[in-house]
Image (tube, rainbow, N blue to C red; front, side):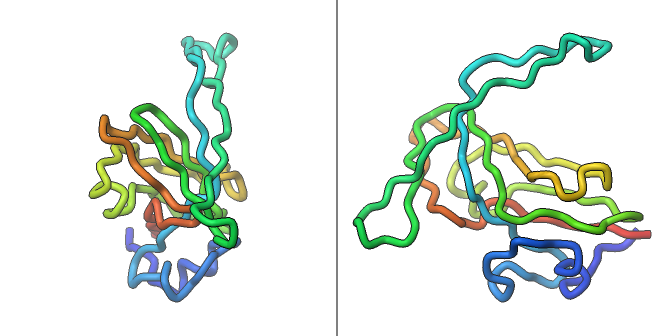
Length: 152
């Protein structure tokens, strides 16, 4: 398996915010469009008939000044879910790996990595994350995750 290079990566993405900033040699930065707080427990069982996703509440970003184009999410300690702007398209015969962006990690956020299958093509890409005791501020469209595509 090989990592797809930058020009091949963009062929598999849509809703890109700023290609020149997000595109790298063998990965692509994904940007956050929405943040939800996990508010109620989900349920898991063996067969799936009693599965229930955790409930979430959308958090609206706050603009520092009324003329600002983008706002900030001022997050307290807790568990959240980030929704990315970008979506993956046409990635049969590849494996998509999503990991937290290095800045996300350096900001103190703990986030899961995800492997996506072609069955999820076009679906909204989300990443669960935990904000530390000190909190964290995230600006709309911040580069939050990194996407790698591996092909045979």
